[in-house]
Length: 215
Image 1 (tube, one colour):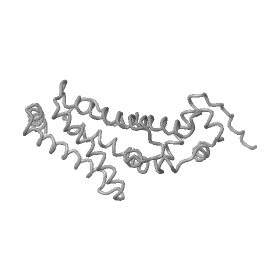
Image 2 (tube, helix red, strand yellow):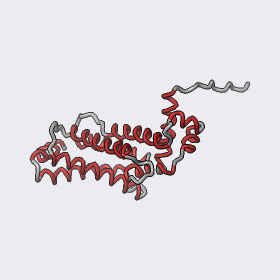
Image 3 (cartoon, rainbow, N blue to C red):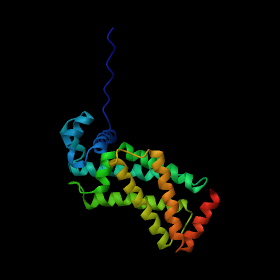
Image 4 (cartoon, rainbow, N blue to C red):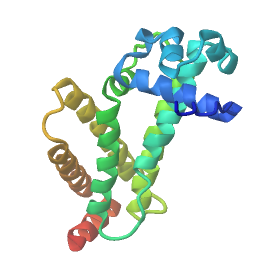
């Protein structure tokens, strides 16, 4: 007997939208946004181009921004680490998730952070900046500082910029050094920049002493 074909199930609006976003993210992960067409997304999702337009009437720009928000939400979660145990291992675990995302979305990550895309707008820039600010807030929370001063805030944001730059270089250098080495290097840089700031800022100096005691 020939096995019965599986029953067709009509996707809900939310399920279909999620399917299209997943297909778009898969394409944006390894190709620059300007190199991805709606036909590519439709083919990857196994649907027609008009169906893509039905869910994203704004076309490629709307789809790209929705995919970018989805990726941004995932990146924000990378730094959402429980405040348990010593600080540096917590930071290392957050970096593991962040770098795994970079590894899985290499070309798309590069296009996103380097800018210059034909689909880049003030809205997409704001989405990316929101990820940076969320990462800084998470790290400051892990530091246990309720009212961080200017020097500490600046140091944390500088380090986040360094993490982004290192990630871009890592992709450009054929993903070398190995991820665990890159992670440890970035953690060491975090301690180093805080130590430099500690020479000028009592608040940061107190944090560095606490980190040293936790090691």
